[in-house]
Length: 116
Length: 114
Image (tube, rainbow over all chains, first blue to last red; front, side, top):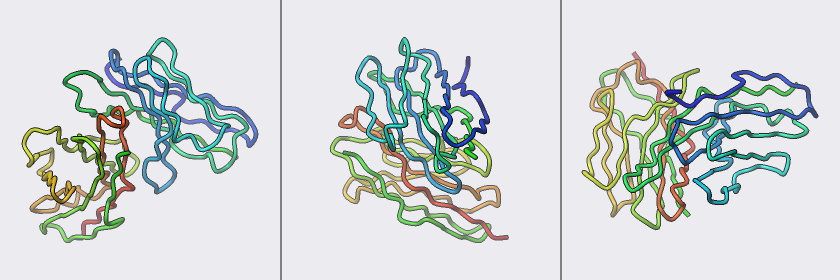
């Protein structure tokens, strides 16, 4: 597609359940990011994939959070045993890596997660 | 590691007056710097970017920012605020040392009074 696509756009789940959030980046973009934005807050970095390199997981808040990127394209963010404090908008972004890289991010619309 | 500090969490201006949103960064290498805007219940939009070309960067909607290496600053300005400028603004840094991992500042909420 033309832009970054995220699904689902909204997810309501019960505390303790697992959730999966999907991101389909812009075709050809080798870098993919996940951020979390809680109500009225800034963007919290979660994880960063760059080509075939090992991902930078330094922002993941706990071991309940994990992410993978298959075939250098689609990424899935998984939250296990969800807690109420996990409620937030999860944003995915992609960017182009190369000699002319500027690092500009292209964002998806986000997945709003509500944990009851 | 790179980092970015937005010096004001909230800025309030009157319509028609200048806007100044302050940002300082830390980077080991020549950074790329960006300002993004997020209007209420909307997605993030790139305002402008600095990538080692001209130090004064012009963006959309009349905004501009000046890269000052000696001050490690990248402040966002606009000569005359409009009501539609009310939004959250994020200063962002990305550099080679971090593998171009992109870090956001905490954000500055701009209020525009009539």
